[in-house]
Amino acid sequence: MTTRPGLNPAHIIGAAADLADRVGLYQFTLKELAEQLGVRTPSLYNHVASLEAVQRGLRLRAVQELSARMQQAAVGRSGLEGLQAIAAAERDFAQQRPGLFAAMQRSFEGEDEELKAASRTLLGIVLAVLRSYGLEGEQGIHAARALRAALTGFVGLEAQQGFGLPADVEQSFQWLISMLDAGLRTKAAGQKGV
Image 1 (tube, rainbow, N blue to C red):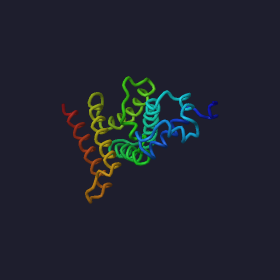
Image 2 (image 1 turned 45 degrees about the vertical axis):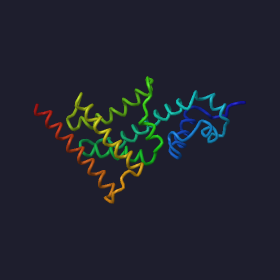
Image 3 (image 1 turned 30 degrees about the vertical axis):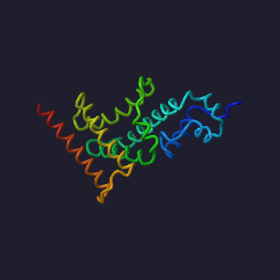
Image 4 (image 1 turned 180 degrees about the vertical axis):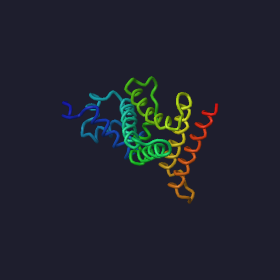
């Protein structure tokens, strides 16, 4: 059987991303992906080794796409304005690309250089915003981890309709950003006083 013209890894990952966004990251099989692409499953194996390889490709696509969104949002912004920009970019990404957002949360043992480089790019954007608070080096890493935990937790809960109380979720998100901003400013001020 000949392979379908135009079928390449980028096309396959694009179709997998659409499928993951629609049905969930772990709710589709290579058979369903092949059907979406209009090929038979054995033909798909001419282009991807396994479902694991597809999910690795989804993680890479997710990190790259979020990096591009954050970079665009954060350009020329610092401090609270920069924090709001990258937080909103992550939240929008999670809402618009739920399958890719889930793929970002997955780690792979022995990640290859392409994944590591993409992750460093994303981290660099976050660290640039944190530097505008005066947090660098080890303090910047701690701040980046705290920021990731807070934002990923919030948007993950929001995606799963985990906020059942009647208060406005948008206001809760703004509270989170204000609290993060206050915490980052306090840590930066404490670091200067050392």
